[in-house]
Length: 151
Image 1 (cartoon, helix red, strand yellow):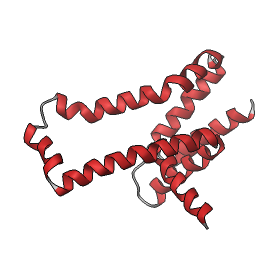
Image 2: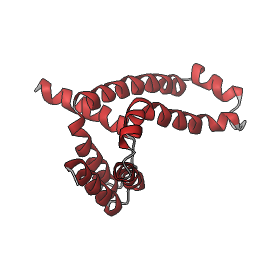
Image 3: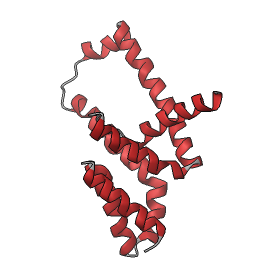
């Protein structure tokens, strides 16, 4: 086993101990791909298309209430005619910008992903937080790093 396998195995164990099913399953799937020698085929595909596929599934989930007819026109108008609705629009725009900064950070410093993953698990277990995706974790990390660099 090489170093990357040990790291994935460590993440699998941390995911199990921290009750983070997504981390555990993701690590397990990557280990299976690695040990089945499909990594040469699947890793490039996942690097190129994985994020977009994941975001597509997430966006489908988010839009599902609209597809089911659970959101009415008056509720959509609320987003353009009320202070909370306008703040929600601003928050969404700001979050997408920050997520972009997080993606840039993960590309520039892939070694930081392990710490972000471990931090997410620690926050879930000890701070009773709700697990968030790696892009949002990277966005917050990018903000904290920027503050650190200022000082």
